[in-house]
Amino acid sequence: MKRKTCDSNILNLAELINIYGDDSAETITTALLGFLESASIYVHALQHAHLENDLPAVSAAAHSLKGICGLTGVTYLASLSGQLELAAATHQHANVAALMLEFAAHWPVVQNQIQCVLEQYGG
Amino acid sequence: MLLKNFNVLVVDDVVLMCSFLYNAVNKVHGCRAHKAFDYKAAADILEHEPIDLLITDIELGSKSGLDLLMKIRTNAFTATAHDIPIIVFSGNSYRELLQKCISFDANDFLVKPVTYAHLKEKIYYHLEHEKTIQPPSYYIELMRGVKKPERVNAERARQSSISTARAIKRRAAATEDILAEYEEKLENLDRLEFLFWPDKVTTGYFQIDRRLKNLVHTVSFFYQACINDYKPVMKETERRRACSAAEALIHIATRTRRAEQYPNNEFWNELVVRLDELRPLLAELRAIDLRNTYEVIELLIKLASWWVDTCKSPLVNEVDEQNETENM
Image 1 (cartoon, chains in turn cyan, orange):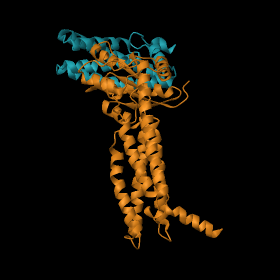
Image 2 (tube, helix red, strand yellow):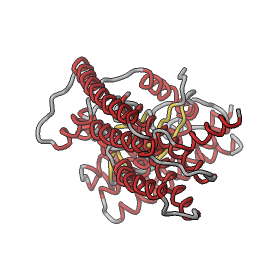
Image 3 (cartoon, chains in turn cyan, green):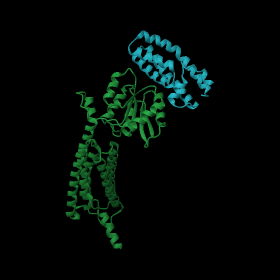
Image 4 (cartoon, one colour):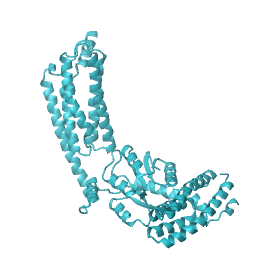
């Protein structure tokens, strides 16, 4: 019942469980807390790099973020990060700017979703 | 199920990913995980731990997983063999890097995200199946990039390995001949030409005797490791033991001589000469490139000669035998 509140387009718990090979509350909460901590660092790095117009740094941060989003089942953010990485690597400034806006709007949604799941799992 | 404990190194500059891989590998029966977040830490582990499998991300900040792959294949790490299986995490946007990884015989490529079940399957597969890896010289030539070196197929690699083994055996036979010559020489010599242990020897002398025996044992083990072409890490371990044994002998002898009432008698003068002869051999042993089997065997011959000349029959034993005879 609890999992019904989780939007799989934002956070796909089934994917997370499949990747970790374990559906225990401990594994799920550890993975999500770890993700929040790590992702926050890369999100800040990404925003900073964008402000500095440092496209290689945007691409590198987006690449790392894509990896940990994929690992945690954070589906849509993984897709956005992948698009950002590619746009930055190919110097598509306009695309990078548009994707960064979308990214900025979506990141709080991801955080809320994870907090919600963490509460459900007692994290 | 894997029977031995395999050392698996996971390398990823993204902490969360690295921790996931580390925990996943530790869950695989028969595997012990090591983790590194960057090239330098990974190189350090490969240098000091005998790693059996490397799982690395291709992007590691300033250096890449390819750099690790190249270093391993060219046999640049002391503790890790050059032909270990290597799994590379790759992204679609690094085709040039991937091409190079293929040239350096990466065993497998994985795309993130990888599930625990898939990773486990890959680990089992690569630890249980051997892939033909070229000799390090092939990859060294490849790195120089002058021309694409000729690949050695499995049969030729086997033939090459056999011919190398034969050459080593021939060399070993030559070593045996030299040693036999020394044995014969020894039989024909008056014992006084060797170290003459004075009467009423003290504990210090017995310690020297023990260290001399320990040195010959460790040199013998090192010799076996080289002749039988053991793994580099084993050769290195035996080399270190032999060095420690030689250092201990020199240390004990120096300390005992200092405490001696007559440090310039015939025995000490002889021993000092022998130890002075041992020092350059020890320096050579510390520095020698273990990959150069011929040079190593040359050095082992010199060490064997030194030992035979010095103490084939330490007179401490004879004193013991005399005492035993007297007691009987």
